[in-house]
Image (cartoon, rainbow, N blue to C red; front, side):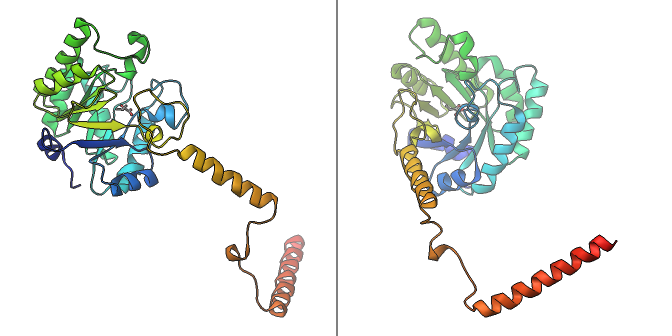
Length: 291
Ligand code: KIV
């Protein structure tokens, strides 16, 4: 069992900020865990940042299972959280349970679903079975078609009511935490005060119990990122520079240099071995032809 459990995440509310980051493969998950993240999250954002899709709507359960396996192998300390992709839990509670089990069997410690009140029964059932669940309200990217795009949420009374209803339903159903995405910070603050479980914000300001960012956004792997992202590095430029240097080295015959290859020190010995190897090859080719 990993050190950070859902119970520890709950205990952090109001005491210590929770830090969560997405990771989709073994090497990045290793780094995230070593950097002291509390939650390493296989988000369905992988559809966009890893597979180049325009939205998260085409992400399959198979993709989530493959990436969860890779991440779970790397993480020793942090809680491993896996996203339930679009269409994997909305059709029936039974299907939601079956798919959540697949993610747990792939190595996740908990699953995340988008929405709250609509999935009350599913969350309750999963929690009763022993599967910890994180909810997600505010901007729910799997519903971006209905929402009319990726936009700031919580400006109207109706939206505030819906966000609060989701949060309270998740708390009542036994979820251990919830993500609040891209809402006005006053709304995120209200929710954080109204529920006993931790709130983890993304683009929702500082009055929440923790923060989550997408790996590619915070490390500057793409030029365009959501407006609320802080870029902590410019890896795109660093990677491009390194690749250009490699390209130039190969073209200009600077790579591989003497440090990167090995040769026979005794050239006579090599000549003998070469002659014998070629004789053996010729013999076996002649025998092959005779058959
Ligand atoms: O899929 C994802 O990366 C997410 C985060 C934005 C919370 O859901």
